[in-house]
Each structure stands twice: as structure tokens, then as C-alpha cells.
Amino acid sequence: MSGFHNDLIALLPDLSRFARSLTRNEDDAHDLVQDCVERALKKRALFQDGTSLKSWLFTLMRNLFICQKRREAVDRKYVALADEDAWHVQPGNQVAHVLLNETMRALTKLPAHERTAVLVLGLNDEDQHAVAARTGEPVGRRSTNARRAASISSAASGTSDAISSCSAADLARAVSLCADDIER
Image (cartoon, rainbow, N blue to C red):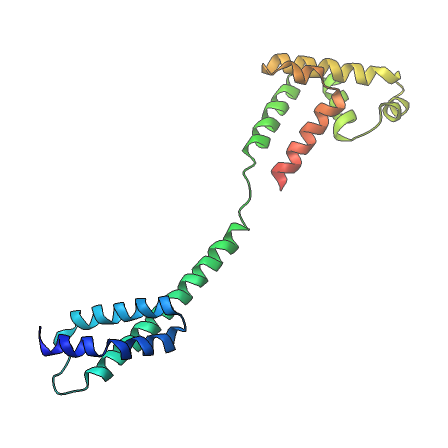
């Protein structure tokens, strides 16, 4: 072994003490000493014979420590930004959009009086008694038209029996809720 290696080995206890004073943690100090020795062996050609090896090694260690702390600060900032961005992600609303389009397509295939029944009872969220009083029609007529519209629209769109069994108000509320989801 050369004199450089022997001197380096002799300075390991001093490097360990200095690393502990910088890091204030035994494990981090060992890692810092290892990084310093590795860097010293790689940069051996930069060391000038006749100068203090101890000062050169301490300077290497201090510079390594500062670089590590800067890197950790950047990493913490990146993680904080990544966590902050995660809160701004909104769930997709494609399902609501597709459901709205299918429902609207089914509504356009209905006769005008049935479409009106669905829209008046559901979208306007009115009671069928209030609608009957305002229009002068019998109480059950709009409700019957709306149920018929729901069954026709489910048959036209090929959807399940769940739509045909729901009330007109439920169908219209579904249209309204889907529209609200898409607007958000």
C-alpha cells in the first residue's frame, strides 16, 4: 500500500468524529465517511503531496455533506409539490357524460307530450299535483306519460329493465344529476 492509503486509514477515526458532528446520526455518519473515502480515492490525482491530507479530506467531507443536504432539500420540495398536485386531481366524469348522452338521445326519440312529462316532473322537480293544477290535466296523466316515456326510452336505447321500472321523476333527476356532474 502507498503512503496515501496508510495516511487515509490513519485518519478514519478523525473522519468519523467529524462526520458525526455534521450529521448528528451514527448511520448517516458512516455513510458520509464511506462517501468521503470513495471520493478521496477517485480524486487522488487532485491531492497535492506536501499539503495536509486531513484538511483535504475534511473539505471533501464538508462539501459532500452540503451537496447531500441540498439534494435532500430539493427532494423534499419535489415530494411536497407532488403531494400538493395530487389534491388537485379530479376524478373523470366520462360515465356521467355517456349516461347523459344516452338519456338525452332516448328523450329525443319520445313523442313531445311524453318528453314534456319527463322534463316537467323531473328536471323542474315539481310535484305532479302542482303540475296538474297548473296545466288543468288529471293528476295521474303526466306521471303515466312519464312512466311510458321511461319504458319507451329504455327499449329504444337497449338499456336494462331498471330504467323502464323507474319513475319519470327519477329518470329526469338522473338527467339533471348527470348534467350537474358534467358542469363540475
